[in-house]
Length: 579
Image (cartoon, rainbow, N blue to C red; front, side, top):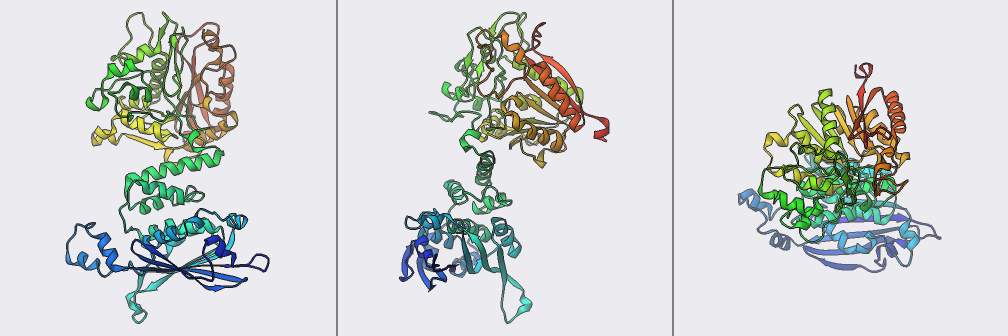
């Protein structure tokens, strides 16, 4: 296998600086041992005007056979022969990628103490690989490399035999890339995309390959239009690993777009400490899921029962810094509790103040409240949402900012709902939602009714179009106001469901919170809270802009002076727009 990297220069910036950047002296040929052979680095030409570094990998067929022994179960003659006669010593594949990573490790990191400014700046580069295994042909090569900024991407097919052109072309191409590119970026792109083109790896793909992919893909893979295909083929079509990689790449993309850290996006629930999150026999595991220790004792081990138990704690996801957990706090008497996610669970004053956490802990929380006891505000809010969806005749529903899946679970219980899509930016929240919904135990018919997907609500997503209804329950207040128009367009302008249900706290009601200081919002992550007039003005403006009528419904006990604790708007697409 052979690969060359060339650059040009001037007397002020000689091309031989390539030697400093690669950490390989142009006047010496160097040899390195690899797992499957020997790698040689040398310079066919090295002048101030042009410099070319070459990597020649000599694969030891015996070592390749020995390392691969036992990895194939098929003992047919064809497979047995293929172990001895194959293209691995000649065509660029994962073997060459591993050699690149070993020989040019420091260069791939973009480190050069002697010429740091050159390492950080684009260079005029030309990369040539005479034989690349490309399962997908020239078209796939261009789909992978052209979005990366190369001015020229050439992938000339290699004929099976030049003497017999009627035999057609082989799956191999002569690859040539040319353009202005940082050397470290070029090396990392080759490290990832050569195995992707080949579609196979010479070693077992373990979960740590996801981390390798994300490290090598830093700065370019998250925005690549073919990132899903790249992840799938790089990880040898192990779909659960590819899904993990794609989810983490999406977080990187969203964080880069908002110029924030990835950790601040994926914060719907805190990182677990101690026992695994799924081990609900330990009380701390229940706290990680937003349940108190009493609730865990009441619910028992979820993994050992098919009887689901409802909690009145809403966990939803916003889209500015990514996520929020909101228990839709109710008026407090000082006996509320706080979940691991940081959301307060307070008490409700009418007709008799009771901590909402007590309601959550009851095994029969799904049932009607006891006589003389008001259902929790979270329960009233969900009942109001479900009622609005039933009135609209919604069959397919989006729960935008689904968090840990409380509303998704309720929707799946509704006989008129055929499919529910839960959307959240937090991978951890979606993981918990899947576990609480017991997706792994669902029948095929039930599993077909629910989809949990990662996404940010301030970005348009074609997957969300064509639904009957969408719900934004306690979500909008977690966005910075300048980001709100992006959500409005993504939901009302792009997805355009026939019905949209929005709930948000009523700021006027905050004076009824005994423990909430004057002028404070109900949750630390709330960026704003609106009174009734502000919410109505916003809803009418959005409806007029996107062709929706709007009706308002109070949620919770309505105070004659300050209104209800939660306000709800139901947007319905006008007949003209629906037509």
